[in-house]
Amino acid sequence: MLYEGVLRKMQTENGHPIQYFMIFDNGFLNVNQALNRELQIDFIKYQCLNCGEDRPIYRQGFCKKCFYETPHAGDWIMKPELSTAHLDKEDRNLEYEKKMQLQPHIVYLANSSNVKVGVTRKSQVPTRWIDQGAHEAIEIAEVPNRYLAGITEVALKDHVSDKTSWQKMLKNDIEDLDLTEWRAKLKPYIPEEAAQYFIEDNTETNLEFPVLQYPEKVKSLNLDKTPSYKGVLKGIKGQYLIFEDSTVFNVRGNEGYYVGISIQ
Image 1: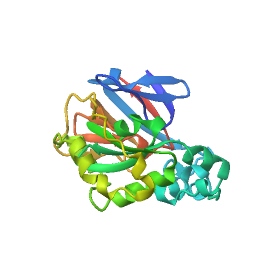
Image 2: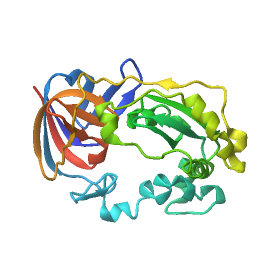
Image 3: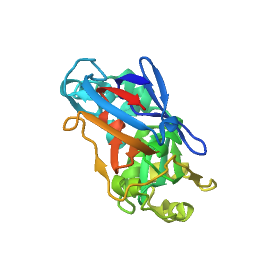
Image 4: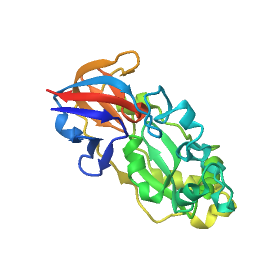
């Protein structure tokens, strides 16, 4: 079967294990069903997720021009503390920014390679944790807008990491930790504006990824350097495909690349 289209991050359904789907113009692929089968990925062209043009992808699936213009790539997306919609102040498109920023957000702890603090819209739980390859996670606070989530994350970054080691995550070089204990430890550092939103009566969420074989040493597939690749799929974790020869492919990191995928 041949699938063809522009890459976007895989859609997921939480289960035992998590189910992954790649959505294309001519249908969708349940990636779990491709485990232990040979996949071939062929890079055909670029297709910017905003303008649709065949221009080199700069960041987040956008060409350089669109990255600096589209409201879908504003600085507040990567840095929630820069959100200004609650002040009725526009960055690139106030209507879009109000829609995205002025809704409940979760400040959380996740463990994928180590404990890290992060922010996501409430509607994206547990999707955000799945995308990060976290095997366990817990909510710290539920706040009414993105700005409050951002300043809480910034305050907590002085006491816990905000980064994931994707290599450790993919090699499954991890340990189980008591996230409720971590949450209690971090409570005193939550900013006064967000203190009332602290959550202290929930439990960890545990996630199970469909991986048959973890790589000992990861080799990242770069479609610009290797436009055609073939390998046996052995696992899916985070937004990565893991192959038998230890090659890994970051689907989300290649958004905007138009590809053909065939399964043997």
